[in-house]
Structures are given as C-alpha cells and as structure tokens.
Image 1: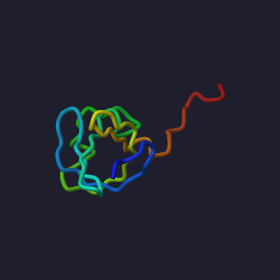
Image 2: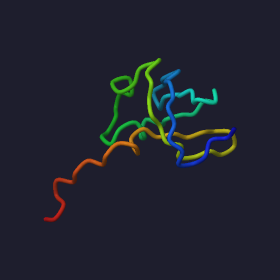
Image 3: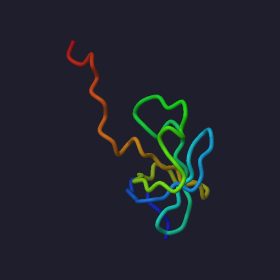
Length: 86
C-alpha cells in the first residue's frame, strides 16, 4: 500500500545521518526526514533532536520515484512571530 501525500503516520527512527533521519513506516517502507524538516528552529545537530529507535509522528510531504519524504516540523504549531502586528 503506497503512502499518500498529507498522510500522518507513526514511525520509528531507524538511522540518522548528517542530512536527515530515516524512518520506518507502519507498512515497513522507509522514508526520510530531511534535517530542515525536523524542527521549526534551525537544527545544526540532528542528534540533539532525534535518536535511533525513537517513535515519531510524521506527515508525508513527497512520494516520487520510490522516495518518501517526511516532515516532523509541519505537525508542530508554528512559532509566534515576535514582530507580528508591528
């Protein structure tokens, strides 16, 4: 069963690299969370946010040519802009 863009899934981090984390999805497929999709703030060290074996909730943001792109930060509330309304 193919995952759909916009689908929210529970997964498990299976590997971490300098550029992102690999996440096993419920159907046993693997997707990747790019480092820029981990948190709303700048992430210089992904290992400060994720660990192997960690359970995460992800949203599918892309699925092309067998590559599943995932995001964690898009499920988090957006930070308040301190300059809004000025």
